[in-house]
Length: 66
Image (cartoon, rainbow, N blue to C red; front, side, top):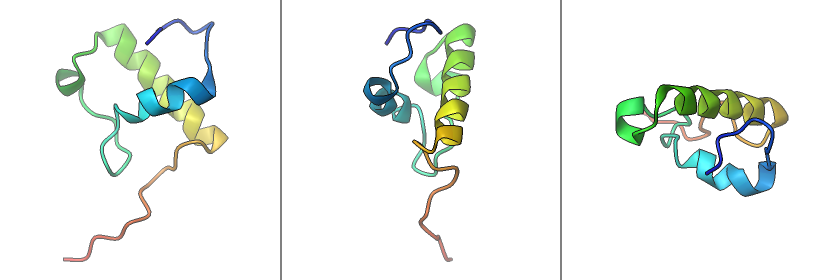
């Protein structure tokens, strides 16, 4: 995955970005993903942009009742 801010292809990167999210759309930790700090910041900014554009939902639609 290219981590430059200049080349953002929304439709190609959406599946790659979703791999960094848990099932409830929370971002996985840096230790789990193995990303460096700058890469992690870039992914978090990209996820925020995708949420604003509506490509990723803010929360999961499933309700967990215990």
